[in-house]
Length: 451
Image (cartoon, rainbow, N blue to C red):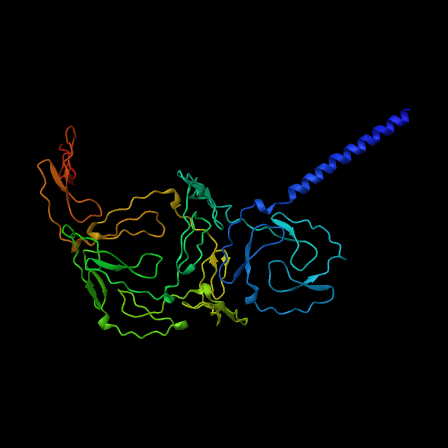
C-alpha cells in the first residue's frame, strides 16, 4: 500500500513538472516571435547606390549596397573552404567548413572581447569597440510644449523634435505626379524637389503694379503685387565700390550695394551635360550649367588600381579613378582619426563642443541702415554686422534739458536718453572731464594730499 502511494506521488510530481516547464517554454517561444503586423516601420531613407533590404527575422527594411552596381569576381577557395555570400553583402567569399572543427573559448584581457572573424570558425580576442559618446557631456534637454526629446542617429546628445501626435497634416498634391515624401524627424509629408532644368515654363504677363515671382520649391514664376517700399526715413551708408565693381540698388531695398561690372568680364559659354541649357543669375555675369539631379543617374563603379582612388568631380554624378596624392611632405595634425581615400591626413574623430541651439530662444535683431543680420557657425543667435561709422552721416537730435546725447554700443548715431539722478552721489576730488550723462568726472590726474 505504501509503495503504491509513493509511486502515485512520483507520477503526480513528474506530470506537474512537465506541465510547468512545458508552459514556460511555450511562453518563451511566444515572446521570441514578433508579429510584424503590429510594428510600424519608417521608410528606409537610402542614399545613392543603396536599395531597401529586409533582413531575415526583422520586420523593417534597412539599406544595403545596390549589387547591380558592383562587379564581383568569384574567388578560388582552398581545401576546407566553400563559397558563401554573407547576408547584406553582394559578393561571395570563401567560408571555412566549421562542422568538423572543435573550438576553445579564449580568455580575453580587459578591454578585449571574444569574436568570430568573418570567414573563420573559432573566436579570437579583438579590441572592444570604443563608444564615442562615453566622453561627451550632454546638456539637460527641456523641450517646450508640443515638442518631445529624441536622439538623432549618429549623434550623442538628445535634441527636441515636434510631437507628431499633436500635429494634423494635409497630404500635399505635388506637381508632375510626384509622390510626397517625409523625412524621419518631420511630421508631415511634402513634395520632393523638382528638377527645374527639365521643366518648360509659360511666363505670365503681369500688370503694371505686379512683378514676376518664383515661389520656393516651384519651377515656374507667377505674378504678385509689387511691395510698397518706403525709403523716406532710411539712412544709407556711402557705397565706395572697388575697381571692377559698380553700385546698384537691389529690387525691394532702399540702399545701394556693389556688384561685378559685367562689361569688364569675358565669359565662355559652358557646354552642359544631358543637353541642359546654361542659366545666369540676375547678379552674376557669366552663364553656368544648372545643378544635375543625380537621383535619376545610375553609375558604373570603376575598378581603381592600388595607386588610385574613387573621386566624384564637382557637378558630376558618377565617380572616376584619379591618382593618390603624394603625402611625403604632408604635415598632419596630431589626432586620432581615419584617413579618407585621396587624403594625406586623418579626419580627427574629436567631437567639437559647441552650443546646443535647440535649448536657446533668440529674437531676430533689427539692424540699422537696412543691414541683414548674420549668424556665425559656432553661435545660435543672429546679430547685426559691424557698420563702418566713418561712412555714415548722422543727424544730431535735439535733446531736452533733462536729457543728453548717448551713442549705444555697435551703433553709429547718437540718441537722447534721460540724465541720471546724481542725488547723494559722492564724487572724487580730482581734475577731469565730466561727460554728458555721467554724475562724476573722469579723473585725468590723481589728487595729492597737502602736508
